[in-house]
Image (tube, rainbow, N blue to C red):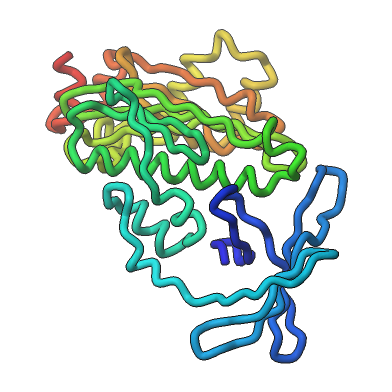
Length: 308
């Protein structure tokens, strides 16, 4: 059962969930395995479990259309006893508790680049940056971000019909945009199509404490830089190059931004815009010098930026 309340399972040789339609016939649990071959086609039944309760779990048969039945015995898995094949982190432990299928797929050795500056998750093929010599807390935070996106990528691929699973899906990129003594910042970019009405995309920024890996809010550095103030400065920075339609959209939108740090300033990108105007979510970089009056110079984070 996945977090959305749907039932499914996967074969280790393929590692994509197969969805199960659940019904009962008396004491027998019927699980119909369904697959979509193409986007315009309805799902077809490719297998069916017929299971009854036993003292240890469930037993019965699995049968593909036109094939002989295979005997099946299911027992409850105790994932707390499954060894961690990645460094323990809050996200990995949460995945084990909340999304067992994703945990079983992703809890395996990942591939570190020769220079130690990135790690590739082999099933989703997502790569995420690392910092050589980083603290355990920062490494855990970066691993958890990669886990989140790898799980989303696998779920996206599984939701697609078979004819689109190679060409469509979850396109992801992440780059370290600032490495400082106290702060590390990352910008993530995602574009995806998972079989819905249209593709979508978004950008997300991270500002992390280099020692602990904990998120650092913009307000911890610039307490006067409220969301409303961010909107004013963002519009001012972009006003001359925005087309009239996007200017109108951003003026009417709520003051909601995702932020990351660069070598020259704070980069703000509008978030939460409707899909039809998502192209208006242009990033503006506010120079550190411009923001000095907004900063809390007693903060070690501000001191590390303005000592540059």
